[in-house]
Length: 74
Image (cartoon, rainbow, N blue to C red):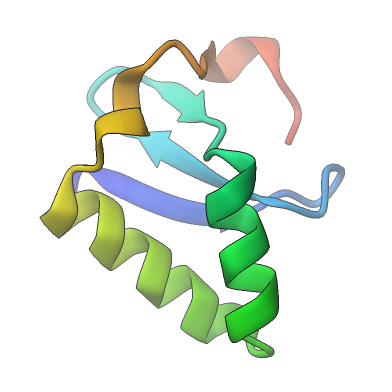
């Protein structure tokens, strides 16, 4: 799997880690809102988000919301 969904310890929000580019991707606020509204369980939300980005390749995945992994402490 190229992309991994992670819940940031400091940010308390989900991020996508791109293993090929070594960057974190900040999902759009509407995606994060949907996850908060639909999933009570963090693990289920993580599975949903990983499936979305690995299988669906949404248009927002590489739209400039990438932060090098060594520049952020999520």
